[in-house]
Length: 85
Image (cartoon, rainbow, N blue to C red; front, side):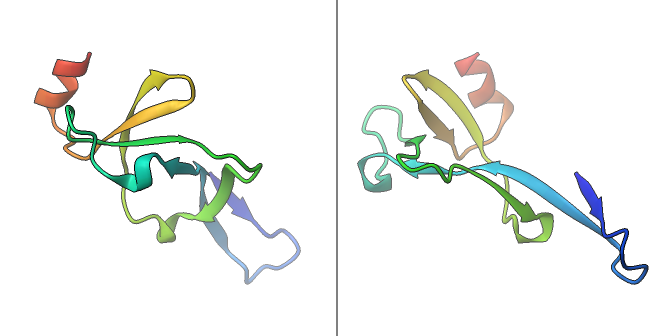
């Protein structure tokens, strides 16, 4: 999304991203069978954040497993995607 400060002509346009912050499950250790990290919903209320898009390091493919948990696919490729779906 983009936002512009209409009160200042010199402010310009900022590009922003809406993120859902997730917490690692099992201290972020790899799951033994899938070799992927699992994450879950945050326990506090600060799960959604708006950040400057320049601060985003990269993207992640998360696969829902139910009950507010996801598998983080750290190997974003067609082979892994096709195996899951």
